[in-house]
Image (tube, rainbow over all chains, first blue to last red):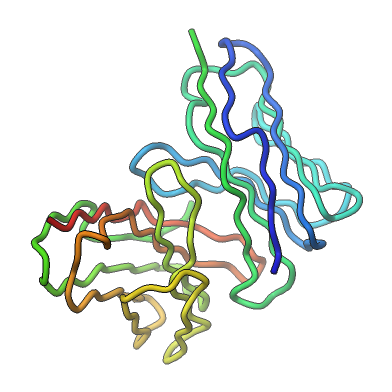
Length: 112
Length: 111
């Protein structure tokens, strides 16, 4: 079946630093989604990507849909304490209901 | 902004009790999902639905059951809760454009 490798598993950074995380897949995807999850809450959709090579920004967040359609990157610029949380990538192969595959998450800690 | 709701947010019950976790969305989405997630861990799909009267089991085996009688509601039921069911349960729904939105989750503890 499809597998998503998300890295790094965890990151400790200083406030103000930029952050980069990525996901790679064993299969091609038609959609990439990035989520942030705070403790005890549900994941919140940050960015959705629909086209190979697409680069989309949401405030300080920028995500890219890899040209090979097997990877995606999320960058956070000038990190702040509220960026702390777990970031998940997810890929969708086609329109069938079941085919959203999630990465294992990147735990981000921002040190003051 | 996604309008998807889950109740209760927190539930502590004894072993053997029957429970129903509620999930509702007001966006008219056909596709809905239930995930199980332990703290800080990955999401595991346990049930999904294409629409009314359509339900399927997900990747993770679960003793829970679901129903989809109305588009808006996708409740999850455990007939006899056990400590191994302690986890966070997340409901989600998806647009036709593949954007999936999650509810706030129900944190279940079975004593």
